[in-house]
Image 1 (cartoon, rainbow, N blue to C red):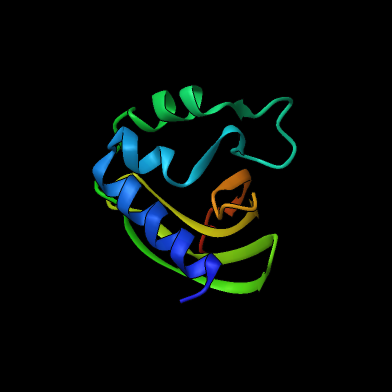
Image 2 (cartoon, rainbow, N blue to C red):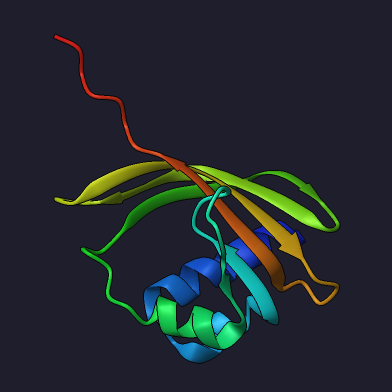
Length: 118
């Protein structure tokens, strides 16, 4: 396994469990969680991230995610996330690692599918 794939496995586990310990295992105490790269401010700090992750999902997510590019301090993850009956997304994530392998900065880049042309 690699740092990126280990982190992604932890992310998927925390996403499914919503368990505070699982979320704390993948983000540093001072982590920044950016929902969009151009947001005015991120969700900042592990307590705020834990609280945000505790919020319910619209439906159970179906995902296909994989590490695309990786180096010691950064993993780029791509894939799709579908919330059946709600929304679908194509994702590209930046995961900036602290020395211990947890994310110190997480940035989501996501797109919704184009509308079908008639």
